[in-house]
Image 1: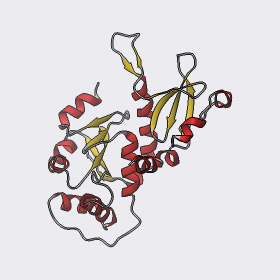
Image 2: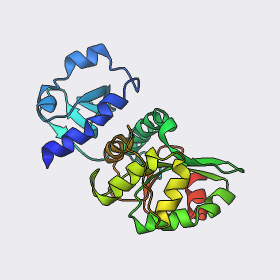
Image 3: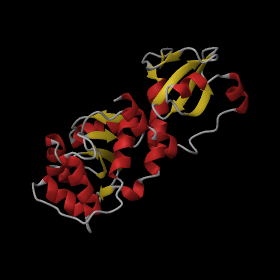
Image 4: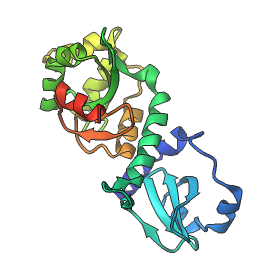
Length: 238
């Protein structure tokens, strides 16, 4: 199970090129050999406001590590100097999500709003009841100026029923029509093709997606579960 998870999350390392450049001096100071032995591939390495503690962006998310590499902290770091605490870890992860989504825009199934004010990216599964409900009410999102962009996230894995359906959808001549048909309960039989479903699935895992639908807002925040159009607007207008 552990090796399978690490293997699937290696996707992030290949997608995160260009997110940042680790300072050469810092790279020499911090020992990351123990992290590499755990399967954690370090992409960027930055100083934090705490002496001796460094933030790493990796194939398994964001962590904090001591200079000698013997102490690893997994969790959120908050700035509590203001009235409302600021989640510094989530802010950094939001940047990662935004940058990586730019690299797969051509692979998304998009339902554009003619009144577009916002774009949201939704990880979806054809076998998910809440995903079907979101799609049934798609017009409400579009009417509110929210363009919906879909990526695939088969909850049961690539070889599950949802995984096979999503691959057929992405291989169809008109993926948008095919996705609507499958979510309406119809059968779509498309010839197999070189499709991005597995890559989307790995990306979702690395982003922290554990269920569907999962929505990534324009600022990179990840919202789990079904949200109404009005609830989304309230979040994006914060």
